[in-house]
Length: 305
Ligand code: CP
Ligand code: NVA
Image: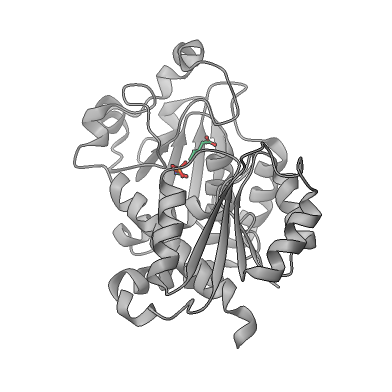
């Protein structure tokens, strides 16, 4: 049984196939209308969401399936009943579980006890569905992902981790530009570096924006992630040198900009860039649905072959 918790579950060819399938689904939605016919997917959220909730709900509907939304009315999963019992019960009713959780360990437990595929729709460490949509968006604009240089600016968080891991597998160079002490988790970076040895992707962490001169794509995310109650104002001065603005694009020659959203305009990204010609941000948001549908089509139907 295959799951999607990190993207490490897939090799380069398989990730490229998922991206290709997402693009095929986007181009020809009619061809996939019965992909999840008579199948039900539970989408479970411990944290807020706009894009993930809506793209899974509408995406599953477009594939002929049925989405059941569960919010955690009583706090984190595991408090009313164990995660094991949660997984056991859900597995008797539905064909897949999509889960957004605080702690990656909850996903490991769900995967251990579920008898249906589990898909991570964001946790403290990874955001694999986001990374798949991001690389699909890059692939729409660059012929060869192995020739792209991607710079992630800001906090070395779950989104940065998934870009590093997925980029490493695909052969894309990924540099994280972050203030000292705010880089990615060292263990996750080292794992990505191991994966990069296979594809030749160059991965780096730096605190200098000079190191991304000549890069192709700049990416940013919030400076304070969900679950962290630090006010943005408290970290603003530390992160402001890493803001994506027109000056950064002019100085580096970077041509395209991505942001997973929700965005904090004039903080990690300026409005003129977000709404300007370099922005692929709304394509990226749209592609969440197509990339996820490729994952659903592949994972939920895996036993039917
Ligand atoms: N990018 C993303 O995951 O957005 P939501 O938190 O709105 O789902
Ligand atoms: N890093 C952000 C991503 C939101 C989609 C968070 O975890 O809140």
